[in-house]
View 1 (cartoon, helix red, strand yellow):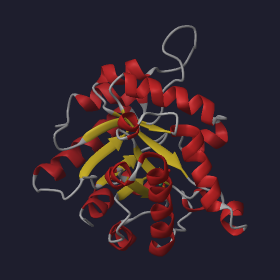
View 2 (cartoon, helix red, strand yellow):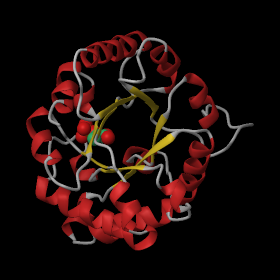
View 3 (cartoon, rainbow, N blue to C red):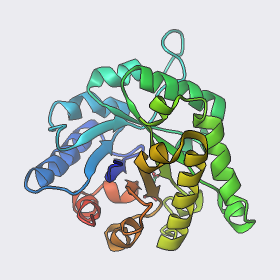
View 4 (tube, rainbow, N blue to C red):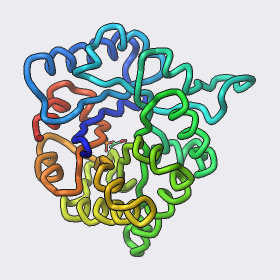
Length: 251
Ligand code: PEP
């Protein structure tokens, strides 16, 4: 059965000391009670090994926010999936809209990244989502289908089963403008149907599909109550332990 998951995406925020302190705080908050979902924080590369040494990964999963599309070699400044895995992290966000928009990530590079992440035992949290223009001109279902088909449908059913999806409408990321719970549910059900068409109903039913975009303690419960919304990928609100835990407790 698919899991409910709340994952934080810290983006390019916090120093190592601040990130370690935040991870410790979340870890301690989780130690005291039984969350009804898996909880993950995705942090900058520089922070991962230090965070891995202070958290209990049975309670709090750890992920990177990206990895390279090459295995190793002369790619100055890049960080490979093997390097991420060597820190102790076990998840990696791939295809975030900020990386597609600012760093030119394409379906082709993402296919490489997904393959390398899986080969190194990392669980990809693969992001998809339309921009405002596509929401307004009504092409959003096709756009999101295209991102899934082009980025992931080269995978075997077994490998696809290892992927977590995050639907993040770009117009809702960091804007304070959340998709309504109905808009999220419509898209998540569409995504599940797209998966079922390719891999069958069982694989589709077992895929966790997270919602991302200005999710906060005040709107998380309504979003998570929808049958096809299996949790959230949380940007801004993951930077404060109380807000992040407020979202975790929405389950
Ligand atoms: C994100 O960038 O993944 C995200 C969901 O950001 P925010 O929650 O800040 O909109």
